Image (cartoon, rainbow, N blue to C red):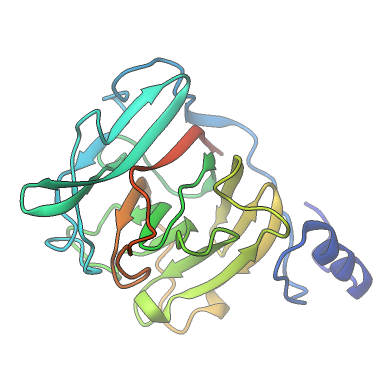
Amino acid sequence: MKNRFLNAFALIALCITVLISCSTDESQEVVNNFKNIVVSDEFDTDGALNSALWTFDIGRGDNGWGNNELQYYTDRPENVKIENGLLHITAREESFEGANFTSARIKTQGLFEKQYGRFEARIQLPWGQGIWPAFWLLGNDCEENTWPLCGEIDIMEYRGQEPTKVLGSLHGPGYSAGEAVTKSYILENDRFDTGFHVFGIEWGPDFVNFYVDDALYNRITPEDVPGEWVFDHPFYIIMNVAVGGSFVGPPNAETQFPQTMLVDYIRVYE
C-alpha cells in the first residue's frame, strides 16, 4: 500500500498531472491491492451476450426504475449485441411498446455478485442532450431492503450533453438521488465520446476509491456519508443507456439517434 498521507506538493502535482477536479483530502490513497481476476468479459465472440453472466431488465424506464426515463429496455440485438469485439448498447428513437425510445440494461443479478474488489470497464461513451449511460453496482438485497437501503455505487455516470465530465457516486439511506455523495472528473482537451477510457473503483470494508484511467479522483469512507454505510455485502453489476430522466432531461432537436455505448471489456479483481 502506498503512503497513507500525501504531502501537499505531491497532491498538487497529482492534480495537475491527471487533470481532474481534485480535492486536497489527505486521506486519498491508491490501494491497488486487487490483483487477481475473478470474472471478466472481453466481448470477443460476436452475437448475443454470455447468458451465464448477463441477464436483462425489460420494460419502460418510467415504470419500475423511476427517474422519469423515456426508453423501453429490450433484449433485442437492435439494442444490445456483441460485434467486432465490442459490446454495443444502443439507444434508438422508435415507437415501441408505448415508448418513443428503446435501449438496453444488462445486469449480473443472480449470476455474479461480489463484496469488495476492483471493478473496471473500458468504455467509449455516446453523447447528446438527454443521453444517460452508466456503469454501476446495486446491492443484491434490494428486493428485501428497497433502494437506497441496499446501496448503490455509480462507477461511471454521465450526462450526454456534458461530454467532458463523468461522475462517481454513492447512494444510501439519507444520501440518495440528488443528495448522493458524489464527485466529478473533468477530461481536459478531450471528450469521452471520442475514445475509450477505463472507469473503475476499488472497494474495501471502509472505502470506495473512484478512478478514470487509473487516476484516483475521489475516495469515500463511512465518515463521508451522512447516513448508514451500507457497502458491506455483495453487489451486482449493471450497464445501461437511458434516454431522458431527471438527471439529464429529455432529448432535444439536436440529439442524434442512434447513440451507442461501446464496451471493450469488463473485469473484476480481488
